[in-house]
Image 1: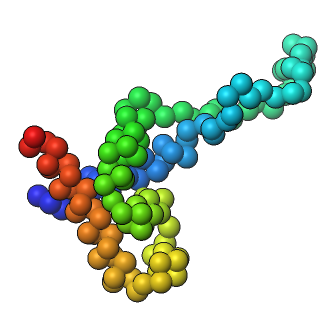
Image 2: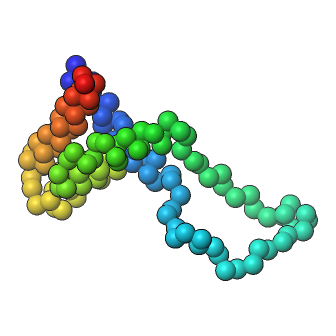
Length: 128
């Protein structure tokens, strides 16, 4: 049973990382472009290349992102938080080993310990 919940936590973390990439960038309030708006003729619009569609996350994905950022990650220590988030973004273990200065087995143990902390937090919230 714990493997299913840990796999679900991993999937949720990866989804949150994906949603984080899809969210628009944060800008200063009242920030506008200084360039005037360009008005195109209908003929010019026909010959223009079509802009690719911007994919935006839906409400469920944003709710999951908020749950991960506001509930799950604050319970972890700073190093655990960095490790979990980088692993959710699919950073290879080799680069993580260099960054944290640990071998892969120790890093995997820390990663699984952090996931267990999240799992116990979730189970504790459901029981209350």
